[in-house]
Structure formats: structure tokens, C-alpha cells
Amino acid sequence: MNRESTIAKKLRVLKPQYLKITNDSHLHNGHLFSPNNDQSHYTIELASEFIANKKLLEQHKIINTLLKEEFDDGLHALSIKIVTK
Image (tube, rainbow, N blue to C red; front, side):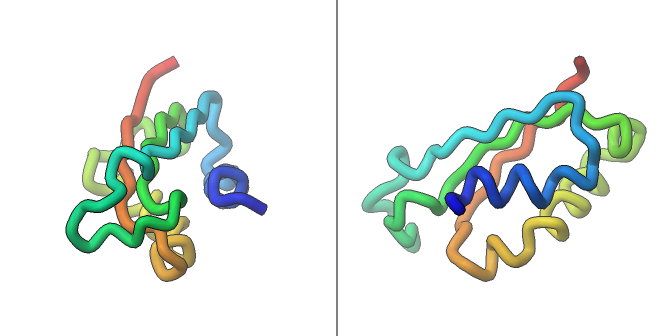
């Protein structure tokens, strides 16, 4: 299973009304500390009623906790955009 599928699966618990996952790894190849593994940098755009009323920091903590194993396994950076749909 590729990382995009794994991220989507782990975020299902948030019951997103909208989820877009973009692999940005190619933009960071050669950067200092970048693992250069083509699956290290992602942007997620997410609309979820479950976290919509939470503060931004709490939203990010929830998402980062859900993806902890991915960070432990080479995910280096995650840009999170909470959207309303």
C-alpha cells in the first residue's frame, strides 16, 4: 500500500467529507535532512465535522497523532489545510 492510501485509511476515523492528499516529495529532493524517498512530504486538505469546531493546534495534534506511525516510518513533513465544504 502506498503512503497516500495509508494516510487516507488512518484519517478515515475523522469521517472526512473531503480529503485530498498531495505528494510534495519531489519538491524537497536534495534539501537538508530530507530522506529523498519520494514519500516524505505531503499536503492534506481535509474537511471533517469531527474536528471543525476545534482550535487549529488541536486539529493538527489529532492528525499528527493519527499519523504517528507514518512519521516513524519516513514521513518527514506534513502540511495540513483544514477546509470547509
